[in-house]
Image (tube, rainbow, N blue to C red; front, side, top):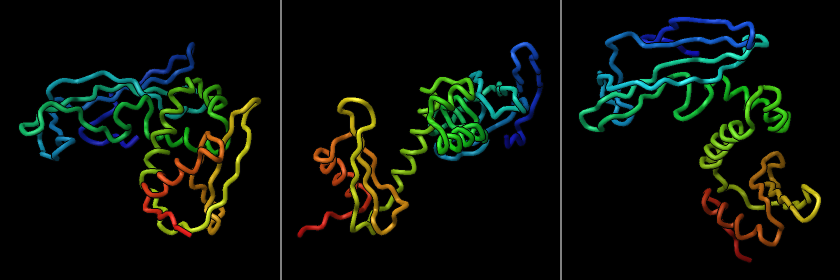
Length: 202
């Protein structure tokens, strides 16, 4: 969990009835923290907010971290919530749990993951979408020159998905869109240019 000074585990409790392991984490009284925006050191704690995060299971038991997350007061930036080393801001899960969710998503549908973990699939999609969007924002398509396009119906009726693949690197999926092929080109051309790709004219 990467619990280091000034953080410490203050208490643990195993609830046999609910099959849950609860872990309480707190910071040492009088601790100061860097500003998450400008990096200024030794900012005083302004107040704290209680948060509960789902962690990876301890054997078959659900594990939850309970922690007070401080907001610091920076002379330059004002009052801001700090970043903790074991979780993303605004996430309901620890980083270890998010990594577990992403690994499971490679092998099974999100609805099935939700049933396995006992979590709402909406929360799981937020995690998957965050890391997918983050990875896509850094993607460089400047070397793409030939693409393959495949369209298929994903449900009964007229709901289609279209997959765009880099022909030179057959393992690289460039774009995955819930649109028919004809409407795809506008979306794909914009996406290509947004990621350093160039539309060649013939």
